[in-house]
Length: 211
Image (cartoon, rainbow, N blue to C red; front, side, top):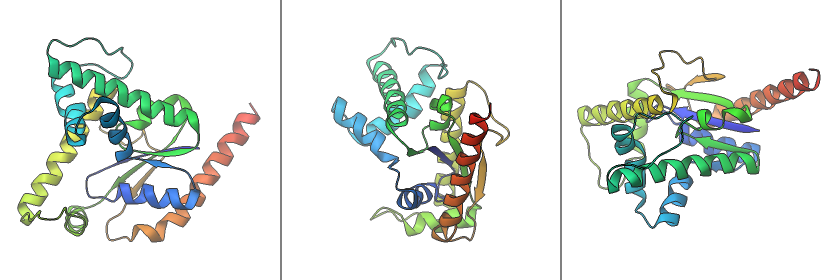
């Protein structure tokens, strides 16, 4: 049972993944992926996160199906190495056992494992409120600044996804379930969602057996 969660910034995708992990008793991987890369290469975690998305997008028009090749500059080389390592780690998690993978185009990377793909989104008011409640200590953004930050991060995520799949997406047909968390307490929907996912995998296993 492999579950992937793609999400808009501030929509609660990470919380959803962690709560699903508690209910289903499967490990959930999010920042752990970045932490593993940072530890293996001796990099700062924020640097890994920045390089793996922004610098790699600007340097290489590759897709997930291509081999990562050598880059012309030291920073670009690091970006390629980090992207390759991230892909390898995500694939290894999927190979090892049931798990929940958050973000980082995991649904594309582990496609051959036939995961259950979720997309989480919300309206701007909900995303602003959630960001304010979970803001790092010392961060004091105005509503306008916060909305700008949310839109910028969502834009970067869209670019990162475009980098991996090699094309723009204008539909959510790649997901098995899209969840609007606007005005909803995520903890209240997780039990029902967990049962839905179990049924989905049971039906898939049954259909596979009957082929």
